[in-house]
Amino acid sequence: MAVKIRLARHGSKKRPYYRVVVADSRSPRDGRLIEEVGRYNPLTTPKTINLDLEKIADWQTKGAQLTDAVAALVKAANEGEKAAAAPKKSKKQLAREAEEAKKAAEAAAEATEATEATEE
Image (tube, rainbow, N blue to C red; front, side, top):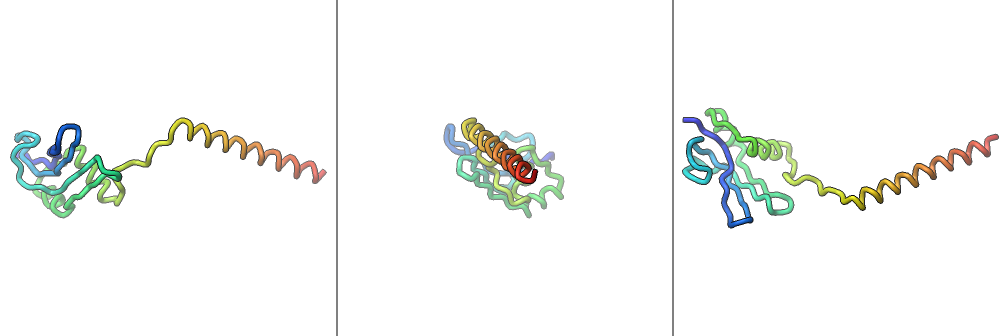
């Protein structure tokens, strides 16, 4: 029997909530499971990951394979990271920071020119 540790989708329409389950690879996505080993809610900020890493490791020693999505969740949980990435900066924020960096570089260049002129 090929056993996988994978996500089973729950929740209402457009409001996904996942259970991390151990299931036979031939069973349906949300169908019969062997054991639930965690939960994952992608809608909370930061994303909520509750995994029983001991059970997952135990199932892996028994030959269970992690899916790509579950492997990423386990990696994030092992590293103690949050599943949520840092918020991306808007184009306006990036442009503003570039402008400030440019002004700071110009001010530094003027300061070095002024010190060189006073030394002569």
